[in-house]
Length: 203
Image (tube, rainbow, N blue to C red; front, top):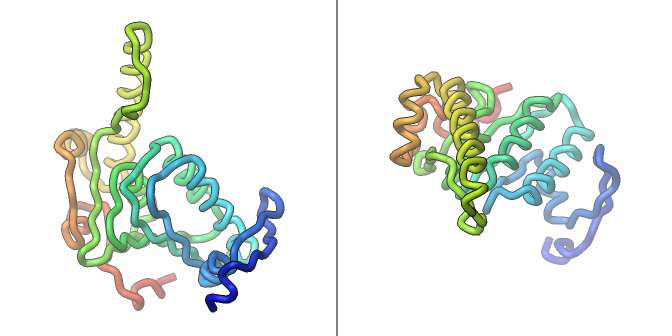
């Protein structure tokens, strides 16, 4: 196996041909992909490319998305959410370790019944944060404030829909940064089942 991990395959997606290493290809054959590390435009584009490949191979077999991410770009997270909602295959989600911030939005958006979490996995929701590298001056503060307010309201509304909590409850819990472990995430409505391989056989 180790001798193969440096080999490259040329695969085809809806975005055209691209190179993929042997380890990634073997993982894709299992129809299992991982959202790990910081969520950025680049990382989401790479993940979507792999999913496109899997969809071309089969539009009847589901894809399982594993989560281990501290979060990142809200815009990139919503790009993935839009892709999943428009895809012709079913997506299942599994929180293996941590699914925080923007990652929790992607996980929560999955269809009810398709969201799994490890007993010690954790989901965290909070208010959208300003990038510390963002340069803010007096002329841009008002514009930035409007953007943040609009983003907050969109997130609160969507989390309310996905968890069946009121917007007021979601806003309260996001203000204090809420961590939910295993069964707590299920009780809250952001996850549906504790993870088991048998449960993942549900169609």
